[in-house]
Length: 483
Image 1: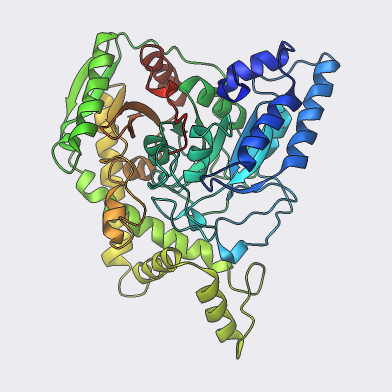
Image 2 (image 1 turned 120 degrees about the vertical axis):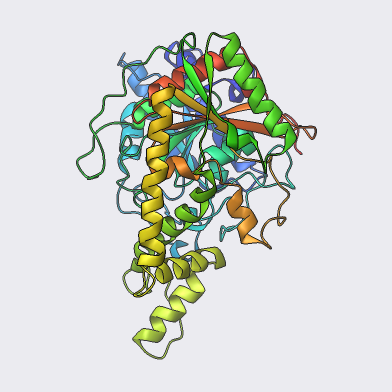
């Protein structure tokens, strides 16, 4: 069996048993990443990866007790800081910026002996749903290179799907882990807000962002989540919940809510069929299906894009051509330096969101837009809280469509935003959501679903995901031939 076809935990087990060396695994992953035909990576660190693998090999030789993922090669989204490594955020603004420190999640990866082979491509500053806005070019979907992988963590999902990484870290602000998982046939967790430290994550929208795992199955995603989750005093929004103890994934007796309105309109027939078939699988495994009347889905997109754009406009104000990052070469005065640097350094989508955010926060419009969006956010949160009183978790599609062709949606930004209709509410509410593959359409493109639970039910969702994947094989399929 090819090393690259093992799951992350299976590889880790073979490394600890001495059947495969960490250096051998790292070399296989690095070589695959260097052959990357999907533009999934912005940078590959061959020297650093082999050095990390050698350190794990030495620890094995000393008989040290290692984590289940020690020696396993993974990739990290390039909006997460790694010391002495480029941190580009997929933007010209940070094209040559080198991080002086590690993000907390990277510190945790190093402590667990996980081998990071490279930084993955993303929509610029994690703003996008197709991974076409990166300054370093679009990421191609491994199932069909003419199609998008989803965004903004498209590089991470594509790397896992293409078998150049055994797992990856992404970030999710409005679906940026889950939607690429749906389009690429991978499994990913958007954790509860505060479950994973955001220290070292370049901020998009601070009240929405979360780092999470992307993997080949729920078991691997759970193992990676166990490494990165936990308390960190450097992130004031981080919570001290212990996620190390697995929760029973037995589906029997679980109540799974089905939001009926999610299936009424705008959903491609094959996506609807696949998700409802998954619901029947849960029923056969002993779950009870509960119909839910959830109406706020129609308000989620406008509320989300007002809130996220407002926070983004504030967070990105630090990139001004003075402190660090891209600086225009020609300018007349300080004001012109600001304008020219930001005009040249940011791409169209980022500038669009900065302008929208600045507008909704401006005097005379704050109450009409931002304040009202925050009120709608509270209403959406109450609806989810009420729904989760009637069930243990909610099942919904991840995206209303399968992966679209490149350039198909770019002409109409509103159509791009509608692809996020099922995902943004979860970020507004701070809830956990697990994305799972649940079928394929007539073009052999993956279809995804998501399980949404109460705050801090991350382990329960992962356990239920494992149980679902124990009786289905959608997660085991991958694009064996180059599309």
